[in-house]
Amino acid sequence: MPKRVKRRKSNTCILIMEKNIQCPLNYTMGLIGTKWKPLVLFHLLEGGLRSGLLQKKIPGISNKMFTQTVRELERDGLISRKVFPVVPPKVEYKLTDRGRSLEHILRSLDKWGSEDCS
Amino acid sequence: MPKRVKRRKSNTCILIMEKNIQCPLNYTMGLIGTKWKPLVLFHLLEGGLRSGLLQKKIPGISNKMFTQTVRELERDGLISRKVFPVVPPKVEYKLTDRGRSLEHILRSLDKWGSEDCS
DNA sequence: CATATATATTACTTTATAGTAAGTTATTGC
DNA sequence: GCAATAACTTACTATAAAGTAATATATATG
Image (cartoon, rainbow over all chains, first blue to last red; front, side, top):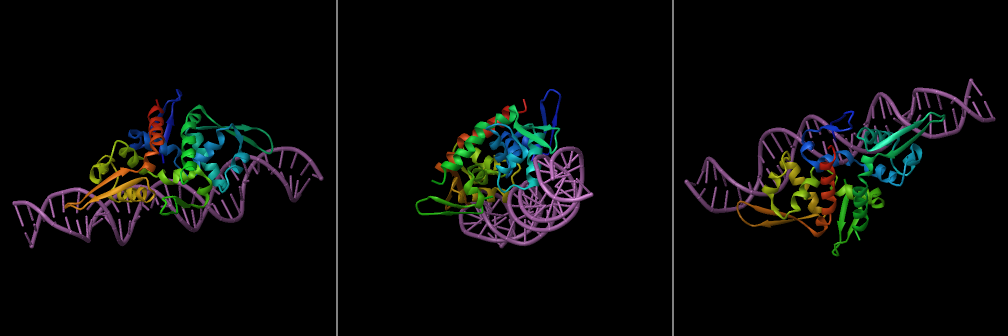
């Protein structure tokens, strides 16, 4: 949803999202409001995971969507990606501080969904 | 996002959303995870509003998207719709109890979005 | 009887998101 | 030298969400 995000050295982000800049709700939804993003973030709450394991925790996600999702989350500063130069390759993903600051929201969304429909 | 929702007399909802039924996070996102739904719900937090006023509070939303959004929110039991049989027509929307139970989430999404990018 | 009103709908197009399936890379161990 | 491995990547297709613009309704008012 967000069109582009630029990042300065200071790590301050300048958003170029037209209307979203005026709408915190849409801004947040633009960062996490896709089919797979909340799930990826949620599974990282308990700690970093290597790529394959993280993907296995999310049944139904395709290769393509997995990569695309983590790429965007990384681009938006919500997760970090660490590559270990070994063969076969090893990559670990974990939440950044910014990503962790969503913990409360992620757990609320999860809680609401499981309490509902009772 | 949700494929269908059936509702019993008891008001218990039976969800037919394939994977979502197993995933509270996706279930919640399926109900509120579109461009306009969080905004509509947010603006109703302060109390019921008649149709035109609610729509005016959401700059950029088209007629079509407004109607579609409130229809789905109503279908999913998050808002209620009251028609006054007058001419010209008058319609009021307000949160149901179920909708109000999202207040905490909506405010968190809004807060996160406004605190971020500082 | 034409206009204004508030709410809503429809047909159509565009854009965004997601899915499928095959291919790529680089090295180790047989 | 070829299969196995983990982590991607690409080309292509399909589906879903959103946008545009015109039209519908019912009636009271001038």
